[in-house]
Image (cartoon, rainbow, N blue to C red; front, side):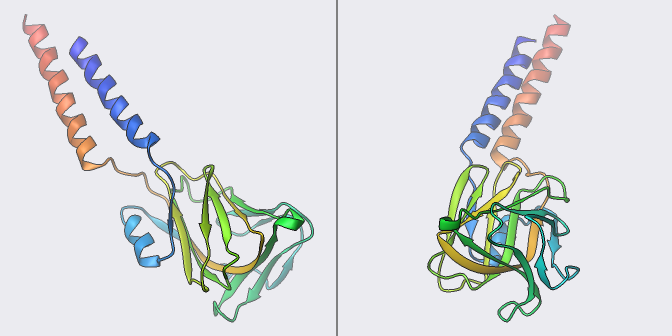
Length: 204
């Protein structure tokens, strides 16, 4: 019995240590983000059901998620974008105006990865805070940005000093993360050890 308890405790400590050391990861390449989420189901919000034009109110339901602006000086706008040749969400963020944009209330279950097509992003860049960790994205108009985390993503918070950008085809990766092979083997070995010790105790 003592061996069984020890095995369970050791497994929990190994798993906790693995989760505690994990941090969100940023991507600017769709293929790399897709590979990182290859074991997860993916849902896509393409915004094609949205009506073109400004959307009244600070908080709007955009299908698979809710987007909320922190100041009334800016608005969500759905437009037919030149760089993303479909309907896209255009937002202007400015630190001077105290504007941030928060995405949450995901309708697709626990989310471990979010990626999106992006247009018009320049050197000013945007910061996306994921589970308390800020990740900075900038560059000469990248076509994709994304994030992953080993813990469920509760929200994304977008902020910038001065940036206007467009997003489309927002992807949500939504499956339980499998244990790394090493941890899975260790759990199996510890489980067998506990089972063997239990049988020996009963025979004695």
